[in-house]
Structures are given as C-alpha cells and as structure tokens.
Length: 213
Ligand code: AMP
Image (cartoon, rainbow, N blue to C red):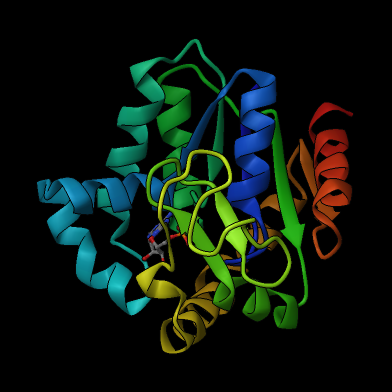
C-alpha cells in the first residue's frame, strides 16, 4: 500500500507518518528529513536547497521530484508513505507521471486538518532528537529530562526553521501553494480527510482507519 499524507506544517505528519509506516512495514519518506540529511551531508542537492529551507520557502520542484524518485525506486516493491511531498499541484502532477512510469500508484491520500492556532503552538514548542529524530513538545509531550531524548539519550534541539519568522513564512507558503492540493485530490479515488487537532492517539486512530478502511 502506498500512501500520501498532506496538510499544514506542524499538523503531525512526521510523528503520525513515522508510526504508521513502522507498523505497516512500509518506507516513511519525509521530504523535509531527506532534504535536511542532504544539507548535513553537503551534497549538491543539499547545497542548492539550504537557502530555500532557511527562508521557509519551497525548494524548486525539479530538485525535490528527482530526490523523491530516487528514494521510491531504491526499493519499489516496499510500500511507501510520502510525508511533505507533494507540496504543490505541479509536484502532484509530476509524482503521478513518475509513478505511472514505474507502474506504481497511490492507494490513499490523506489530508490532515487542524486550525492554524494549533499549528503555531505545535511548531514553536517542538524539540527533536539529534540522534534518532524522535519529536517532543516543550509543553504537550516534554522529555523526562530537559534537553535529553527519552528514547536514546540523544541531545534535543529546536529546528532552525521552527522560529517565529520562518514559521510565519511556512504558513503563508502552505496557504498559497500547498492548500490548493486539497482541491486537486479531493475528487480523486482514495482521498480521505481526518481531523488532526486532537490528542496524538485519537489522531493516530483516525489515520489508521482512513488508510485501512
Ligand atoms: P518539513 O520538515 O516538512 O517541515 O520541511 C522543511 C522544509 O523543507 C520546508 O519548509 C521546505 O523548505 C522544504 N521542503 C520540504 N518538502 C518540500 C517539498 N515537497 N517541496 C519543496 N520544498 C520542500
């Protein structure tokens, strides 16, 4: 089963997507994580992407489409869950033609919906483990020991783009470029919409039902 998860920044795509992919035995392909790894490794794509990411803008389509294609075809038999890709209609169209070129398709496209006030709170309090990538929140799911990951004892950090100015840009980019995906996908087969404003477990149950039901 191949799945697309989309929705605004901070809605929980990463946390929920990682859990669902792990439970379902499929690859979790988080575009933001793939890009951050490329920046860290200093690859050509990472160097090209960095300034866009720092500003909260979308990285050019040609770059992200090529990167996601590489990840998908690395092991096409294993299902995948796309998180943070596509992020505009041009990417959605490119994805469709790329998948059909490889005789692949998507079974479910899930829109995770939450009001903007929730997103701001979630993003500005977010902490991530440097070692394992697990996410915490200063207020809603704090680590047992300040600055230290409960899972692996790694160091927690705040993403550079989780600061107020860049969050504001990311939300504008979402409204202008990513929100139109809702119209693009809502009449297509396999589309589901879930309320992602509640507790983590409630949202996860809704996501599972949307994907499996
Ligand atoms: P995320 O981790 O999903 O919040 O993404 C972090 C940043 O990576 C975004 O603000 C963009 O700069 C970039 N990015 C992630 N996914 C995409 C995409 N599909 N297209 C273009 N840029 C992206």
